[in-house]
Length: 139
Image 1 (cartoon, one colour):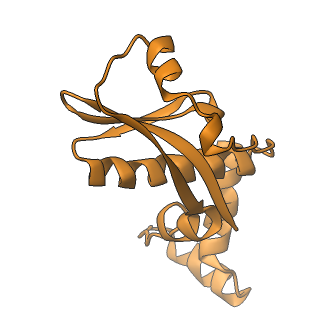
Image 2: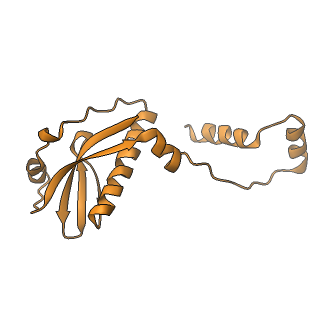
Image 3: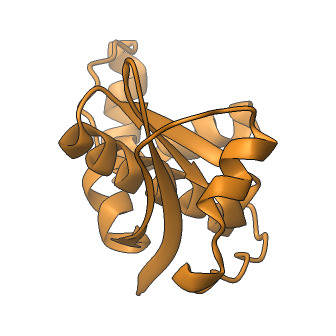
């Protein structure tokens, strides 16, 4: 599912700051506008992914016309000659599969007798390790 939220892009000396007013002023930045756009997608995807995993409701997105970029600048005590609002879109599930849920290979060592016993019982080592880590980390 595609999600879209307005973001305020603010030109500063060091690049661009990006603020999502609908998401408690969630912010990121980039040295160039292209980098700031990429960082905004990553930031939005990460935040929405976290909210969904936590079971929290996603806040509604405001219409672009309702975002007062100059009011946001004032609230944050920022000044800029170049500030604008742009809609950032992301498919959170697709982004998560590519960036957050990618499997990594791990090498481990166990006693030979334990390996033999586990193989005799057709144990899926990856699944057992994942389950054990989740239990240990309370996730």
